[in-house]
Length: 132
Image: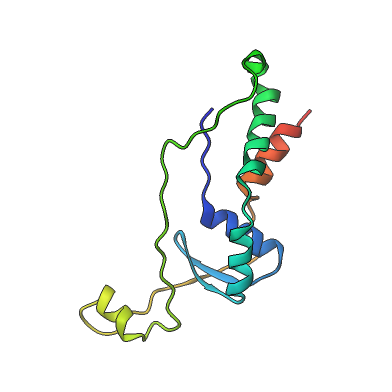
């Protein structure tokens, strides 16, 4: 079984559920109203929870693998974020990094109830494992 997990989207779904406002630009969180809480949520990510959800999905949809016992989940590809968050787009260091000309102001996408309507991967896998 191959699965894809995006940590930024996972965190965004958790922020959304807790009604913590945030903005995303592509796959980067560019603004969060409570950075400390976001860090606490990130620190609370439990790999064991992800493994149990994947195990349940395999047991439900691939019962022929049951004789093999417990599964070993491995990472085939990992990307580590090196996001740096600046307090202002006018920060001179930011401008030196990303633009040789005038200060750069990225276009941000404000999150609305409709723009994050898809459930998190964990929620979708959990429902898949519990489907009857």
